[in-house]
Image 1 (cartoon, rainbow, N blue to C red):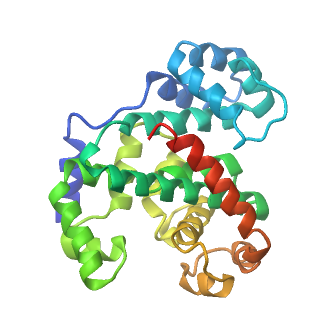
Image 2: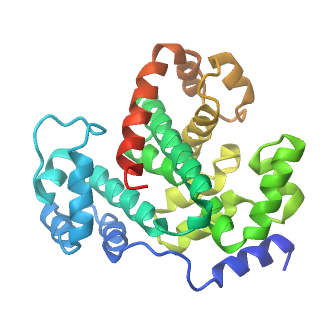
Image 3: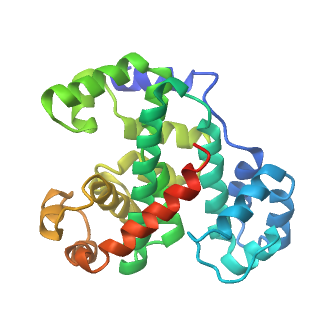
Length: 284
């Protein structure tokens, strides 16, 4: 067993990794059935009152921009669609799973979620503007792309401290610093967690390949979207040509063309990020 495999095995053996609600897991499985009904999905969601409250608050927020009031889950599913509601359930479930944990790293957690939300918003826009993948799936992929960092922060704090120390000392990014510290990386750690949560396979693969979309076998376009969105979230003021030079060569041309025109939609993105952060982070 090589060092990387051995490290990931340690991760799989951790007993108290945060879990997501049974509701989210059931919906994951139900959506594999093309004939699933709105009523069946609604009945599952309605069994979790906390999820219902948060989903209705989310779909009625400025973030979704729906003009009429949505006052029940069945209407939310009909108006927004199964996949949109599913991704909303995943979003609130994952954020809840880590709520209240790592309290001694409150600042790190706030920074983490702000970056993740920014990446999610950029990913949704890139998907919408390029026609690549589904905007709502791009959003959830962007929101979850760095979940491996949360596992490192909580369960491998010594490794996390070494990585952040190396980042500041050498003025390098998180991924590059990881190469000096331990035999894996946060993308792989996130992929293992996503598999443990039984998230859709495309999300597992995208999380694992968001730094190297060219290595993804099959539906690499979603990984390209998240890869580009991640860089834009880290460098929100960068000019299009500078961003393009930094991206993986595998990134599709129409994504690059959209990024090249970023000044035309930068302000819209900035406002949407602030709206999303106010909603998702308002409870701290």
